[in-house]
Length: 416
Image (cartoon, rainbow, N blue to C red):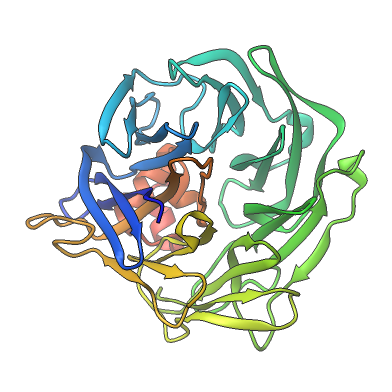
């Protein structure tokens, strides 16, 4: 079987300040899934990992962290060796790395806080002079744009953007953008190459055939109830005028599934859908389902009893035929051909995702890199603006909430 690789990051605020660490995972197939902590230590409380399979022999893991008004170093690793390939002083146009993908001879990074896409030289790992910031005319009045995700389909780059007000209480409709990219020269958006018909607080997307499927929370998530505006939606990505293409609701919360949608991916015609909502105690309750028609569903994982942790994502990867399910503070690795139980369960305990003597207590990020001979990359779980933003407000609130993805009114008043 193929040997594939993934990266993860963990953090803690138990010491009074944020501290983070990045590790890697090696998957030989079957139950042979082995985590290796401490690939990069001495990070702050917002450690970030992005995986890119540049070619059949270049499997790279990009590691950084966040700090207000400071461009943090980016560490580039050969994840299979493992070995540090280069330390980049910092990408001035990428203050808050949120997704990294490869298109042609370049890498493209999206900045969460600045809603900006920046081109990176895939060999030197330095910025080129090419970037695109979402035009202010596309941002609803009174809202701030956030860069959520990038997706490459063929030779075309797509971006997903959400819009929230300054309180992070209210969200406008989300937008899918189709870029025109001329490598080394420009990134532009045509007049009809955007569509703002998606539910509020969209954050994840995947391609199936000619369609892009988008998962949205619907607005602010809460505890004790779900957002009824949450959606799985699709659009024809090949439409000549994306702006007028129909956005179709594929799934919405119901009495059977009283949850928000938190991820979607495809294995051929089979869709894997992660749904869940926080209960009053901030434990996540939900299900991981699979379906071929969005009408009949099979349960892969049921956690309707509620489970701790704040990072939730589920993606199918063809390498070793896996479903990678980050279930709060546990990583479950399934064989997609037999989902009766995971082949491996990795936990925040010594000998698993952390080493003896360490005290990291939350998963912050996860990325699938790929296997030799493939070009797989990317994985995105939902993170709220409090969790994802590098603004002074978010940094201060993270120290108060210590991982909890939303702040109470009393906590917000402390940093007003």
